[in-house]
Amino acid sequence: MRSWSALLQIEPEVREALENKQAVVALESTIISHGMPYPDNVETALLVERTVREHGAVPATLAIAAGRLQVGLPAHRLEELGKAGPRVIKCSRRDIPFVLTRGELGATTVAATMILADLAGIRLFATGGIGGVHRGAELSMDISADLQELARTDVAVVSAGAKAILDLELTREYLETMGVPVIGFGADEWPAFYTRHSGLSVDYRYDQPAALAKALHVKWSTPLPGGVLIANPIPEEEEMEYAPVREAIEKALAEAAKKGIRGKEVTPFLLARIVELTGGDSLRANVALVRHNARLAAQLAVEYAALRPG
Ligand code: PSU
Ligand code: MN
Image 1 (cartoon, rainbow, N blue to C red):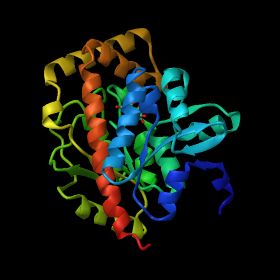
Image 2 (image 1 turned 30 degrees about the vertical axis):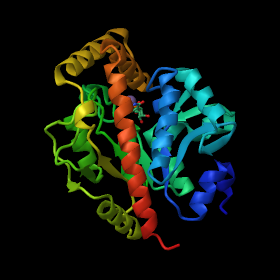
Image 3 (image 1 turned 180 degrees about the horizontal axis):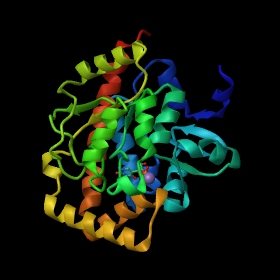
Image 4 (image 1 turned 120 degrees about the vertical axis):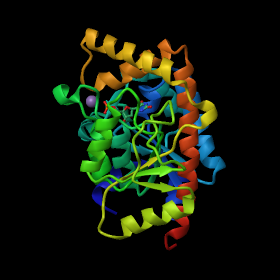
């Protein structure tokens, strides 16, 4: 046991699964506190955990609470986090030791969730969309720490692409520069979160979880550290129409600029405004795609677990 492992508070069910080399899927908590309104956020979090179970894996929602790195969140904590919403501290890599030692409640972004998952030995992680290069980043330099984390931490992130509020083309270039493999699951094109198409390509396409799990296993059995971005397009029947999405995004971006919203507030502000501007349609799409990603991550975790020596 390394000394930092005392900082991990692993729920008994998750601990047992990890010890027995069974399938576990990590889930993030910023999507709960900052990504969706209450009570939809808590309902979605529970639904996503159930989806993971239905596909043969154990869910572990990650967060920081009471001075520990929480691997698996008990129901009361999930409710607390969802109810407090944006009052909870949004934690990325830089925040972890500070929120931890202050004993505060922290929601983990994709970057921080990858770090916690890696410390706990969880390799598969499902979310909605990753952070990326913001529009106008050539001046603002607003580039999510999620991208750096994908380059350095050994976790595969299943997402429906990067959020359409970003500059998808620059985000794609950045991933390439950082050496992050972008895999299309059942897709040749990198999806755009609420919609299936972006016009941008993926590096490799897979159609079977077992084959993809095998590639992940090879990656991490060789000196090739770093993450993998698995793009899983929103199901066709849940996809939004492009025009209203684009309109809502442009309006929300203009409002954010006018209000001078900066730094870590940008993404939560845009997501919340888009939910309002689309009359809740974007929230429905968001819930559907997160569940879809949880299902794929569970299938991958099951296949991955089968490859590891017991
Ligand atoms: N995608 C969503 N909902 C979210 C986020 C992404 O659909 O809530 C969150 C994730 O936690 C992601 C973070 O890591 O936004 C990125 O924030 P920033 O752009 O400040 O790095
Ligand atoms: Mn940012």
